[in-house]
Structures are given as C-alpha cells and as structure tokens.
Length: 301
Image (cartoon, rainbow, N blue to C red; front, side, top):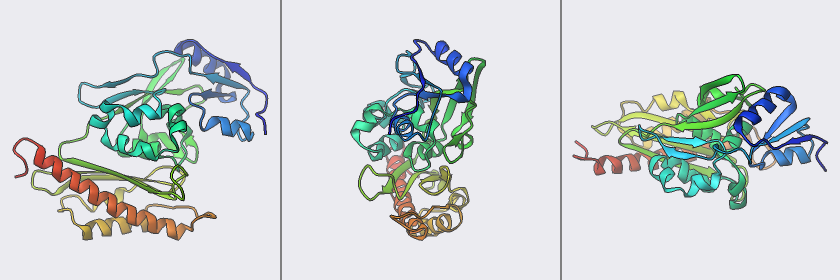
C-alpha cells in the first residue's frame, strides 16, 4: 500500500519544528529515522495530516559526557553510533552491549534513540534499557520544556507521556555506581526479529560483596517495558547466588510480567524464556560486578 496524502514540512531549526508541531498537534507525526513510522504510513496504520521531518534540524545529534560521568544524548543520535561510540561503551556499557540486538545494521544506521523511545514499542530494546538505566527524557514544546523519567514516560502500548505538541529532544543517562555489573539477553526466532523475550539487568554490590541494588526490565513482556521491582527487592542485602537468582527470576516470571502468546510462542513459553534469561543475566551481571570490585582501588574487602 501507499501512505495516505499528507503535507510535508522540513524545518531548519528546533524552534521552527516546535512551532509546526504546536500548530498541528495530534494531526502531525514527527519523522526522525523513520524505521518505525514509514511502515505505519505505508500500511495506513498512521494517517497524519502533516509530517514534520527533523533531519535538517541541527543540534539534536549530540553525544557528550556529563560532569557526573553520565551521558547526555540528543534525540537524533543514530542507534549505530550508540553501538560503536567508545564513550557509550565506557559510560553506559549495558547500552553498548544491547545495541547489536536491535534489528539489523541497515536499520540501526537510520534509527534514532529519540524515535525508538517515542514510538514506545514494548518489543523494542531501547525502552527497556532506558528504564533500567534510570534515564530521564527532556521533552520540548513551543511553550517550554519538562523532564520525565523513563519509568514514567512509558504509559502503555505505543503510548507515552508526550503531549501532542511535544517531542523528545534529549536523553540523560546517569553514571553507573561503583561495583556495578550489567547484562542484556534476548531470544528471537532469527537475529534481528522482534524478541520473544528479553531482559536488561544491572546489579550493584556493596563493599562486602552483598547485593546493594538490582534492577532489571523486560521487553516483549507486556504493553510497556516491565521493571521487575518486587523480584529485585529480594536480592537486597543478600550474597549473589544461582539459587537466589533462580528464585527472583521465577517470581518475576510468574507475578510481574504479562506476555502475550502469538503464532510463534505461547505466553507460558515466553514466561519460561524470561525466567531463564533473567537467571543468566543476573549471573553475568554479578560476575562483572565482582570484577569491577576487584579492579577498584583497594579491591574487595
């Protein structure tokens, strides 16, 4: 099919883009990489009156280190850059590790961070990563700006906290605490397909080797990224072990996720995948946290 007719705008500045979005509101769609939007237009699942192309807007493709050691990332930074930039690998290794799982290189060459987050596909990797990393999103409109945490940004299926006249312009990723390990795992029918289950995890140890904090979130497990808060709380103050990880993974799989069955896998099988992936991800994250502790000045106590 061909897209329905629409007016095309190519603003040359952010102010011009925001003004166009303010005039058209819910009748407009914003084009960044287009890797999700163009198929929706072609199948007429989206029929905007106006398409606002951001690719000529300068200043939205920045990637820099913050004073606290975290990252500031512009909404138009391409996914391939997140995969390959050494600054991302140093400051947000979980993000760098997960990016090769996102679709295919041709798609990552065009797809953007802001576009994926704003699209809010629950089967996509970047929304779950944003939640686990504790990211904050800067939303702009012609009237001003506001900051929203990733945990509050994703509301439901393809639904976010964005108002019709707003767009994502920046994502802040805080630094990882000391003695923190990470892991990302997913299972798909073929590499590059949507995952049947996936998990992104962070685990921080205290100076005694106990778990000070654990965070993990699932993709393809509900209508939005699903953070396993109840299961993660089980790990607090405990020494990491495979038995503990299996218990936490089982709790999350049974009580915190709600995967939908499809022609490729039943909901029960997806729960099984989530449990296995969680146990493996936590084991890897704990091993990396121990390695980080041993490499820190003074090493473990």
